[in-house]
Amino acid sequence: MDDNKIIELYFARDERAIEETRASYGRLIYSVAYNILTSAPDSEECENDTYLRTWESIPPTRPNIFSAYLSRISRNLALNRLRDEKRRRPLGTELIIDELAEALPDTAGDPIEEMELREALNGFLESLGKTARMIFVKRYFYMRQVKEIARELGISAGSVKITLWRVRKSLRDYLESRGIVI
Image 1 (tube, rainbow, N blue to C red):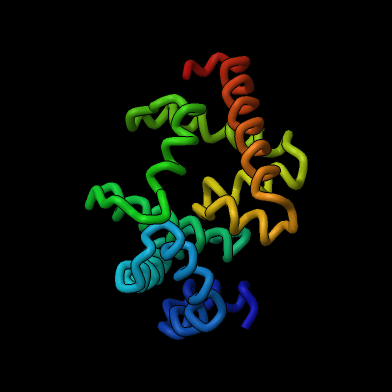
Image 2 (tube, rainbow, N blue to C red):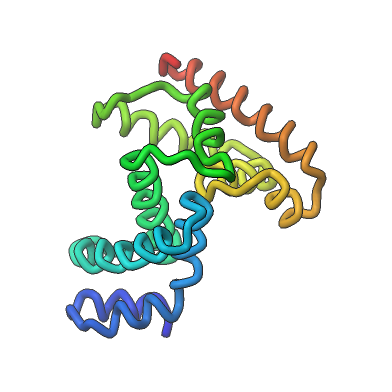
């Protein structure tokens, strides 16, 4: 079933929407959570929570890209779970978050600062080349490991590392040029 039909099921409050979402995107939702949590039971719980969150948010929300919408929900739920439980993960999720934290300001829950940062990040990502943007998103949104990104893109792990370093440095410079203090 295509995305628009699934979204219409949500608007009609038809429970088949969840079944169709699971059939079309269950693996994606699970893998996003698993890349962060590295725990099958926790990832399954995040997957189920993603269906609930989606049910609660559609309507009124009408996502433009349904897969990205679901991925974002799953990612946020997994990150919240990770923060709440303060777990140490063998795949180094905390290290990935720390890498990016060096280039980003702490908005400390200030909604205006968060909105400004989000807009600046979107502008920065649009300015990147396709490969650099893909590497950045795979690493910091999907929490993929460097080796995994290198394999997927057919480049060396060293190239991925240096690209990430350059992009973080560029991000820091980009934000500072817009008056966002790091």
